Image (cartoon, rainbow, N blue to C red; front, top):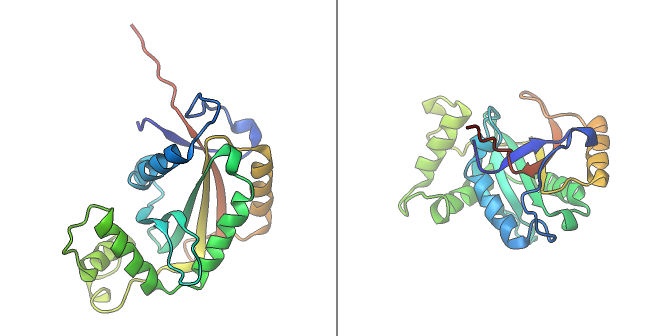
Length: 213
């Protein structure tokens, strides 16, 4: 069990969790960065059976924008996953920001995502300096279930029209939760085949530990 858990928050009644930090300032900017990396490099532990694979943290593939996605991943069908961490005191318009990222990704070519993610994997992802685009493409292709013959020349295909948005916070405000629930009712959910956007709201919690004699 991870030391920190991500708990799905579908409605306010379901949020029964312990905030990560008991301090009054909650999740600080420095801690946000640490938890971002903790989640990013342990996606299977935090989101079991979702098939998420890390592409990059602080992703910025746009020449005319300085905006950065906290965590960019993909699922096993090639759909893109945007994971944004927000502090309780700084979650204003978090859902709108994430939707903006989804829109920007929808017009970003797959080869740009592949190239940017390769740079991240070499700089921060633990890949050796000589790691090549062909090797990274083969790893991505294996995750996406491609046949070997499909990975030789062209970049892998990321389905930027099928995006999952995951908002993670130490405290999920009722305002944010209401907005996310409302959006979920009126946008088409992402499906393994077909276009759509799924938006989820999660809360960082410290799991309860029981000690028995």
